[in-house]
Image (cartoon, rainbow over all chains, first blue to last red; front, side, top):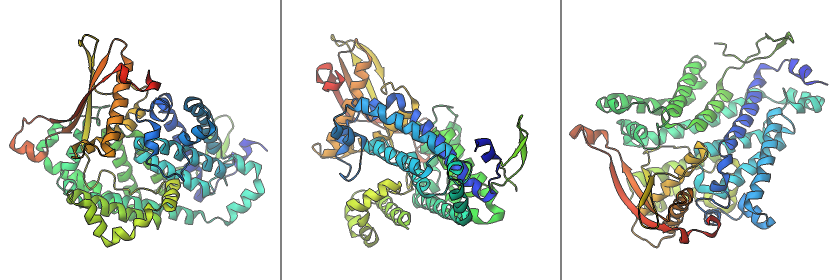
Length: 309
Length: 187
């Protein structure tokens, strides 16, 4: 049993999206956590800018939070967060490698929610989609291929791979994405500011956005039609996202949606949110298909991903 | 199905809050669809939704883009000499700034009339936390003046009638904090 041998087994093209989803979400969760690691004491620790006991008042007592757990264990929050960080990183690696995959996803989901609920006021959109992604990974058979589980439990995974309808799984993910974007677009349509360009203007001139690249936008105030056009484009891309299911439109709609998220990254500097949404889009609609090519010295043929249309 | 219902609830809520700010709560209570979806507030349901990540609607930045609130911290020495003005506590990582900035939306409550409400007390505590962090960053500083302002950038409509209109800053709160007032764990 060796990892190379397992890689060499061609992953069915219709299951590649799950391999991609598992690995990319695990890497994303790891990087996103490391992106706040140094400031954990000020966000969720004893030095939290909004003290944990205050935030705790806004969370149902049925929800496990790191604050509550550290209190009940009698462990100082600083030391507790160090241990949690270690466990969190350990399980993200397990998830990425597909080792005890569903359990790893469950542990990460619980730790992630416990962190968010420790201080609910420091959460934003990306956190909900991270929770949703981890929740999906608790159930999805993302370890059937290209995973340590597939090596350790070979027969079980082969049997599972034979009975799972990967296309159905993907279709369900797609339906979820359609619901997400429909409501995102519909809610914007309800706001008159989105229809006349004011919302886009306000977004790009907010003081904390557009700081990294400082893209000059003042000239746009002279061209309200352009701002209205961008606003309507966002509404239409999102509301009619379900048209991505039409084969002939798929690559255009996917490109437009990814373009929109790249725009959000560029102007709003919400890199993590954009990255996760792109991962979810690719998982649901990118056309993964087995393609053979040669990697380095090994000279073996591996499955890879590409757009075929 | 769950996500559909939660989103319908979210859409109704944000629509009413945007177009009927004055009596939003009353209108929400009177809305039959919204009322029938109140089950999502149930403790058991809410807990389930939290663990699936589905406890929110997806109408981000809608129906309107929320206003931003700015903070300004002015540090003074013992003899009241101005040392430095800064706008945000120094954080090690940028993503932390994004998260803390998210919580700034709570400062909206400073525009409400009841100064004794729990929401306003929460804002005061958060502002004190921010001010304390800024104060700790400068050893020479003895006290800090913390301001919260509503930021209004001219709309396209306003720019049509006045091309040179400057952004407007509306002062919502101004308070001094000394080292003696810091929380124990900050000292």
